[in-house]
Amino acid sequence: MTPDWRELYRRFDEFHDEFFVSKWRSGLQREAGRQQDALMAMLFLEALGIPNPASYYALELYPEFVEEFHHWHQRMGMNRFPEPGVCC
Image (tube, rainbow, N blue to C red; front, side, top):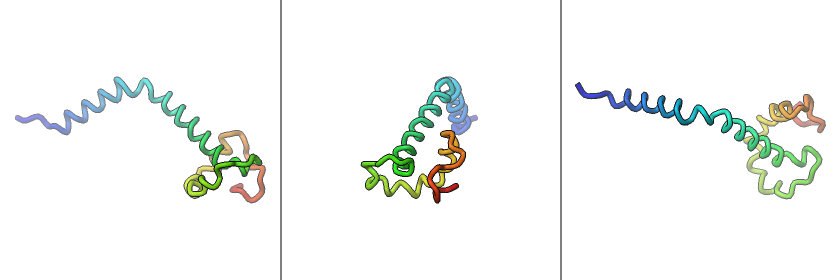
């Protein structure tokens, strides 16, 4: 009987995930959240009243992040965004 390579690979992947990755997963997720929050703050500095020197270069990113903006400002502690006409 030949070994089922898919099953062996799946078991190895589960072992690797549990042994190496699971210890660091929460720290990696926390750091990814911090980096995403910093990126959102940098993209929407002008909406917060701070001039953004890189706004010209960030124009392409606005459509990607405008949907996440509402969740971001609520997570940052602003139930309603202070600027009128912005999402809320």
